[in-house]
Each structure stands twice: as C-alpha cells, then as structure tokens.
Image (tube, rainbow, N blue to C red; front, side, top):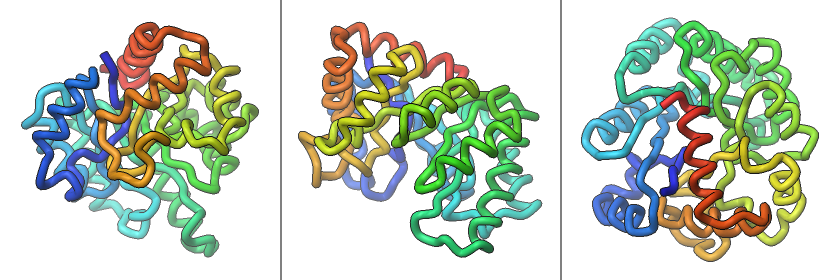
Length: 256
C-alpha cells in the first residue's frame, strides 16, 4: 500500500473529478494521502477535505510565496488550525528564491520560515519543507533552529548527495516525487541510492510534477506507482518492499 506524503488534493484542478481521482488512486494501491496548505485559506480547504475523505490527513502552513502575509494574527490563526486532530504536520513551509531574489523578499521569507519552525518545535509538529534555489539557506536555518527535534521531510528533494546527507543527519527524510524519474536527473537517483530506502518518502505534489510516463499531464496520486516502480528499481528492491518501507517511513516522519 502506497502513501502519497505530499499532494494538494484540495486544489481547484481536482474540483470536477475529485471522487474519480481518489478511486483511481486506490485502484493503483495508494490508500493514504497528505494534502498540504500553502496559506491559511488553502490550509482550511485541506482540513475540510481530510474531514470528508477516508485516509486523508492535512497539513497547515504558510508557503514562502505567501510570506508577505505573515504577522501575529496569521500566526495565531495557523496555530488554531494546527490543533485540529487531522493536522499532524506544519507545512508547506520553507524558502523559494526562484521567482524573486530581492533581499527584502528573502528576508521576509526567512522570518516566516524561522517563526514557523519555532512553532513546530513548541507544538511538537513535524514540518514539510519547500526549497527551491535555496538549499544552503534552508539547511543552515534548519540547523540553527534545531528543527531536527520535530523533524519532517524535505519535500521534492532535488540536491546533491552532500545536501541530502546534511538533511538526513539533521533528522529529516527526503520526499521523492515524479521529478526523480526524469531522464536528466540521474545524479538525483544516484543520491537516493546512496541514501537508501529508510530515509525516503514517496510523494506526487499533485497536481504538479507528474512522473516521466505521464509528463505533461495533470499529476494525481494514481501516478505515484510510476515513481515507486522507478525508484525501487534504482534501489534494487521489489516494489512491495519499497512501498512498505516508504509507507512506514511516512508514518514515522509525519508522526501518524
């Protein structure tokens, strides 16, 4: 049984056929899901879906793209959402320097990131970390904030073996999504092989980043099987063993 440890199933791209999406996922062996918010509004939508759908958990957090909204009121509302029994994870949070490298934007993102990490430590909630063009700062801040105490996952990890090792040594798992199946990312697959299966979680990031066999289409949890098969082959493991290992990892990393 596969666990999609990072998706956005409350997204409007699933509005018309969400029931079919879940049916296809379960037929493909995906039985549990974590749907993540990236703002207060999206976090509420994620929680509503988790309340309504079997096997779905939610995460609440402020994504770096929403960092400008971070203030004391937002922090208070986020903490209320994190008290919900179907919200085991604080996320998706982190840093993203891809779109805007202005020092003021970076500073706002880092403040938002640090304060949410401190909230996670205080509440004992693992975190789901977004990093784009920012691995060095993300890893440095995770270390400075003792974020390994709540732990969590480096979502959609794309980085060097040295960065992966630093993340794992801090206490984090690596999220492995469809991007790891892309032909040009052989170095990433070698990194995953060297890290080994015990620190890996499977994810789709649906509706984004579909695996190679479905590239160009809207991603959905049923496609997780393509990623699982590809990475199991890299690790020289039977699919059933890899599925069981990554699902167990998700339970541990996300404190389910």
